[in-house]
Amino acid sequence: MTEDDLISRLATLSTEQLDAIQDSLLKKVQEKDAKRERLTKLPPRTSNDLEALADMQDLDLSSLLRDAKRYS
Image (cartoon, rainbow, N blue to C red; front, side, top):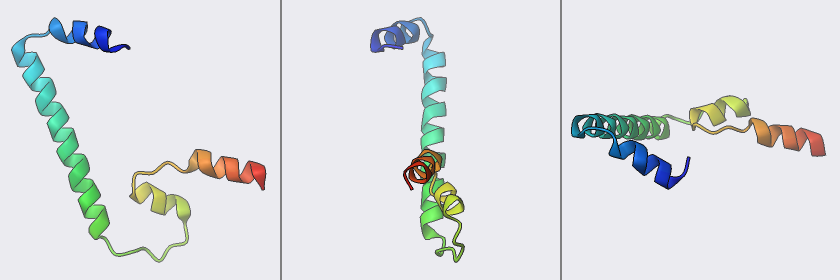
């Protein structure tokens, strides 16, 4: 979807619908920020499970791990 497509789709929406979209986006941003803040306050895990640690930080290491296995 190009920027022009997005603008044309948004132009067809009412003010109330645009407000609802904005509220939804702001709520998602706040939830993500709150989650990130909670995770940074957690003590470091003693687990050696790299994937679990990556999940805690909302990181996807699966492609990186596949590449590492392929080249090793």
